[in-house]
Every structure is written in C-alpha cells, then in structure tokens.
Image 1 (cartoon, helix red, strand yellow):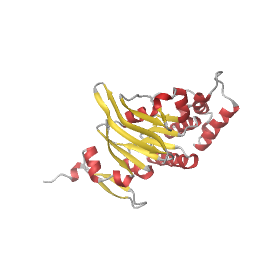
Image 2: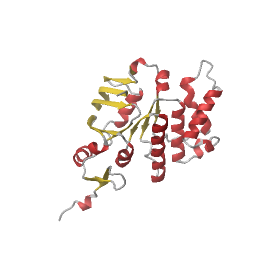
Image 3: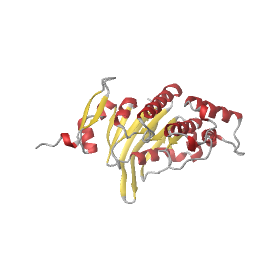
Image 4: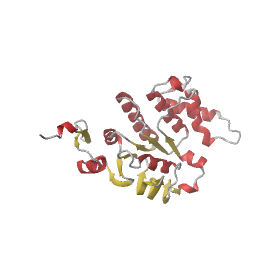
Length: 266
C-alpha cells in the first residue's frame, strides 16, 4: 500500500493551548480522506500542518515518502495544493488569471507563462467546468463558482495531493453536492489524493473512503464511515445526542440531530 501522507505523533500549541496532541495518520494514494470533529478539535491546524504552513512542535510528516522539512516551498507546491476557505475579500482578477496563478511553482527564472502553462490552465477550467467563466472577474461570481475556480487553480499546480478546508461551508445544498461530485470525479479520473476538512458529517460519510475523527486535538477514531460515525463516537466527540441510522440510498451512516425539546421529560 502506498501512503501519500504519513503524520506521526504531531503536536502543536497555539498561545499556550494544545491544538494537536499526538495525532498520527496515514493517507493512501488515491484516497478521499475526510477530517471531522467539533469546533476547536484541531481540524484546520492539522490540515495546515500537512500543507507545510504550520510546523508542528513535535512529530514528523512525510509527503510521498519524503520528510516535509526536506522540501522547498516551491517543490512542495508542485506535489500538493491547498484550497483554503474562501477569503472574505473579492479578487479583481479574471477567472483565467486566478487559475493561471496555479502555475507559479512551475515557472522558470523569467516567471513568464508558456503556451503549455496556458494549456494546463485551460484543461483545469474544463475539468472543473468553468471555462465559460474565464473572462469574468472573481467578484462577479457566486460562492459555488468561486470555489470551483479555487479548485481549478489548485489543479493547475498539477498536484498529486489536494488539501481542502471545509470547501462546502458557505454553499447551498445544490452547490455542495456539485462540488463534492466534482472532487470525487477528479479523484477517480486524475487519481488525485483528496484530504478534506469536513463540517458536514453526512457529506463526509457519502464521499469519504476513510474518516479521521478529532477530539480535543487527538485522533479519536480512524476508519471507514461505518466504523467512525457511531452513536458512541459522536456523542463522546460532540457532547450531544445524535441519532445514527442507515441512509436508504446506499446504506451508509446517516447522522441526525435530535433537538433538545425531544429529550425533555416532564
């Protein structure tokens, strides 16, 4: 089995607070790996550590068999692309210009894009189905369109691994499904390893091959959705009563919130 990412005993503190406390994980090649957990459990911190933007205080990270510290920032960007949560500010660049920025780690000394760079950017827009938006400016786009642009920019880096931080958090239901279907298609067609921080447990169950449940900066459970999304695991992690049953569509776990008024007893 080929592991694209190995994290061992990762520890990281912010302002005296332990954000990661001995987290270990292995992500396999071509896997859709979802990181879940309550707010403050360390999900984004872990993703930033895997991306090389937040160095752990202790522990090691290996990307494609090489210690992350041995990569230059430029070389790491050729292997791995990070799609952060959408920024509040709107770019004035066109979609084509933003997508082409993904070629930056591959540019030569003159920093000028070649015909090949433009071709790669065009294919990335085609793959994410935004080629018709190429001349539009970012501030003119919807949230779902902007998210697809950022994924196209990440694809233009030609990465083996794509990291995404809650990419569906600001999208409506239709755009959430379209975006997740896009990521699944890119995983299958381009054999990209996808690591995603997920807020929605049901989306994680539907698309994730394996899940990592974080609790208080620790890896509480790792495994397929059916093993991780259980009543006991989720009640322990989230501190509330949840009903876990099987989806009638595919038999995967389905998580239902139980309102407090249904738990009250006179």
